Length: 222
Length: 401
Image (cartoon, rainbow over all chains, first blue to last red):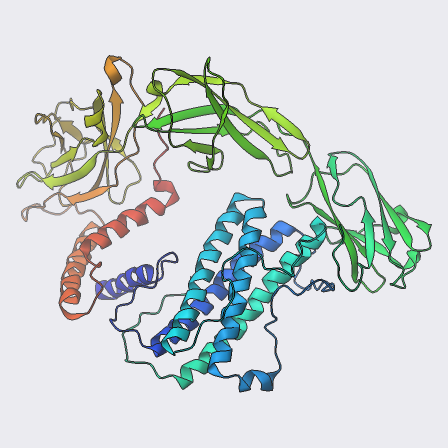
């Protein structure tokens, strides 16, 4: 029916406008309370999770088998820990203060962003570089979003460089194969962090009520 | 230089990350570190995840196993083939990336164009019909003929994978030598040198402010107006124009003539249901540029595009290069009530009803909802155009030479 089509088209248009990756989310509401920021950060982690699936698939295919095999599980050689691990004791995780929870996320993604940017400069194909650049831009958005939540709740941002070159304590891989393994683990860690962040922000959502109810249009699954 | 980590790597492969020509053979060895209790006979090799046959193994010592690989094919992925040494339980002890391929061939078909004489973009094709299997780097270089210095282009992929853009510091009235160097791990290849003068390869922006409007109540005509691209005013060249237009649902573009649209209207006018191909009618309005399309179907949405070619640059008789087409502009021909059936474009009727309703809806949204001021019927029109463009069969063929 014509009216049905109209609604479909309108939803599509709004979804297209509201989800253009390179732009900040178009918000049809005026005010942004802390509650709204948390919701947006949560949405961003879900969006990044979706993006990562495609990026990781492409990247692992670029690395070639066995890296792109589903059951691939290489040893984590005793090299310096690149990124704080997302996995944490459940009781410890439950007991985190809001500040500590947010700070852990902020620090992790800042470092992950650094490593991804290094990856971007080295990677072979133009298509991959393009995807990586796109992902880095979104990830940068996430870091800023978390920073925004922290500020609106009155927490200080964690000290330390966010976006500076590779932090010390992470020597470059001595050969190409070890570098491939490093890349594999970087993507894995990123994935785990995004899973965890969704839970972190869900928890925070419940503690900080939204400022007002707004009309939100859900994007269709693409 | 080894990393100062508490435990050494479990094993070492030699050669580590070698580069090889297609068809060559290789013997690789895996030496297990004394800290790891593995015997040579417990180890095995895989290449790109596939186990290599034990017949190709040789134990060279208590903790060293070698493998012989013959007549290697080109690398499966540009990041290198993964040759891995495993312990008996399948664990990875060490790996080496094999880069097997061919040296590059001379890049060919270098073509360049300059936008408004300010810059230069060039594209080329890689020489190899097949693949080199290795990551190949392309560098575009240029220099003024008879003057010393080689320059290197910095901005790549601006017009496709094999392209580069030189944004400034280009001289006119002087020939340039341009060439492309391809290099990969196995060698270098240099294209033939192309010589050109910037003035010979000039193109410009598409015309701006393209407006398509009805001609009174005439059902089979539309009037197209546009402005010449602003850059034209700065330079001493004239322009000629081309129009193309199509019906919304068709994939076939019809091309109109040059600045002076020539053509005789062949019947079909006033019959309402013209099955004759639409032509254009001369309508020259001084400096402003316009054209009238005639013999169109009534009550139909048309998409129109215009493009521009600078010629007579500084008095020469040569033509430049056609610009891109302007963004399509949509307009519809009127439909009089008295036209009887038989001519009903299928789907066209529905679309105009839908569009009308959408327009009303957007008007309501603007009044009753906050923000969302970008929404409007114009966006819907643009979306329709985008929708048409994104269907493969409806893509226009690339620039004309």
